[in-house]
Length: 414
Image (cartoon, rainbow, N blue to C red; front, side):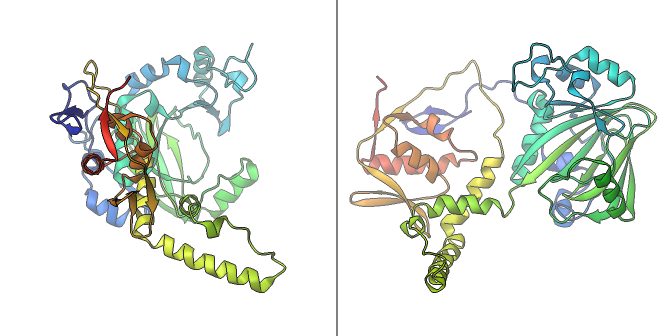
């Protein structure tokens, strides 16, 4: 974790090394398959079964870690833990405590009830296991940074001959990692066209999925260490082998083009012509002229360098930085205040911090600089924590420029 040293407003060095989860690289994760070949030939395009290389692939999960995670009882409730029997979700009263439950509160899981259902052959799905298991969180974080995507990890526990789900497809890309036992995955040739909405449950939908899944593309006998990659929308199903099976699925969801609408709205909110009332639609000519004018401006904004920066920041926001408190080390904090009025303005070529007599061209750190200029007093570390994927060297350079211009000054926290 960076600390402040040398000149009071410089970022440098690291605090004393503390415990950190093992850093996982995508090349190690997907080995022995080549990482560059995966990106070029498979990501978002076609499925892939990678045989495990236990000597190279980082250890992610096992029965012991699953039991440890399940022992974090306050985390598990009807939303985070699901029980399925013969492809149907168990009613919450069959595996949760519902007595004296306040309205709107998720029912907590009853471990004894869950064990009883597992004894009958039910399957267990533990959602967002990365929140309570650091090794899984390390892999999820790596995938987020690798693909500029939101990533979540679920664990699937099933027993001999069990098929927890019928043929289906997912709304995100999937890396399924077999960690215990064996499971047979059947991957079909059909692939839904960039789906974003879940299908409704029910027998009719299941029949339609079976009828539309197409021919068997391939069958993967998954063993510990194997990885199965499925692009979004790929039809598949799975069947547990002779022994109890445990696998982790990492759902990878990069930003889609639909995210551009929110980014556009935020950018265009700054422009008065978009805040103005539209002409009455009964005046076809007036409305048509206004819409054409606005469409030209939308095109200009979307193709501008400044908007490309906004898209990059949005993608960075999908990836969470690794948790690292660095305790017991404590950061030495330097405080700053605004001495001259300044504001961040958006121009198509770039964002800029503008003040009387000058301006400073900004990069992807513009939201952090804008936040700093609106504070009565702030610390650099607090400012840097506001933005995911921030280039600290870039922020440091702009901080120095703002100090040199007299916009910011060092101060004392009173």
